[in-house]
Length: 392
Image 1 (spheres, rainbow, N blue to C red):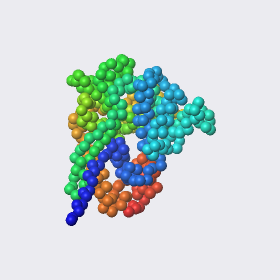
Image 2 (spheres, rainbow, N blue to C red):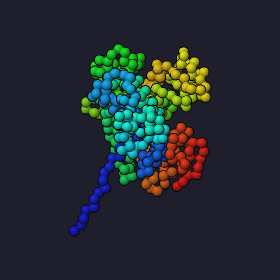
Image 3 (cartoon, rainbow, N blue to C red):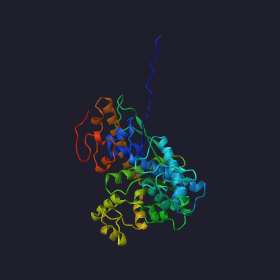
Image 4 (cartoon, rainbow, N blue to C red):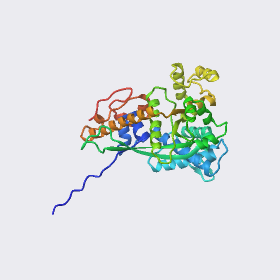
């Protein structure tokens, strides 16, 4: 009697737009160590803050909606701090621990939450400062427009460069999470809603709404400064939003997505290093949102050894919001671009499986800002600022 041989399980690789595709584009070798290895990084600053701000905005919206916290600004100690601690708790359960000096994890006494045990006052570090700014700046205008929060998107695409008996699968999955704004909420919004004002200043949006009775807008948050137009990050974020729009179109209850909105949270509160970068961008005319009047004078006269100037809220808000029109051509271009990224990742995986070794299979992409925050730079084959011999 012959026994049948169990066939290999059929697995479709799944890729997250932010956790996989954008991470790989930042640095393939860092991506390999961070996402494909059993050893997690000890201080994933960008990964941690991106997850943190997403969670904070989601939980803040739920409390605004369920507990009727309609009045802004919210108090940090009594309203925002409990939200932060809840999100931190959830993230720690997933192995995402906050890097040092970014977030205070002390929960305080039961009758005095959020107090620091050493100083006996609310310990508001970088992540808390920016979370408070995000909620109190955009919450009053964004929350009333949300039709569905944290919508999970998922789609299946043909595996690029498929080779029979070589590729892991002939398909791959792509996932993402967005907030969805509907035309109903937008039409009912008050005239002083900042997001509505920014949308109606966008010529592409104004042209599109004349043709549709109902539509949607997708929203995402970035725990970073606004990228320079034409930079890799600027282009990658556009690909991401266009791909989100395609994924949303696959869902049966969706309506046409007119535009995507990205909120660059770090623009709402800049520290010295951030201001130095902004000043350089302004001097070299690299940014698409140039300051004028008092903002320009304050920035140009500021010296890095002095305290950061208080730029106007209007200018900070304008830099924080980016509206990306959804067009068929750019959507398909974005899908092709991410297909190519998946093809590269799959080839790297196959190369490593064939015995090429990690550092010969995954190329580093040295960039000083990325390398400075990377836990793996001590054994990287080519960190920014210097080179090391390749380790097989």
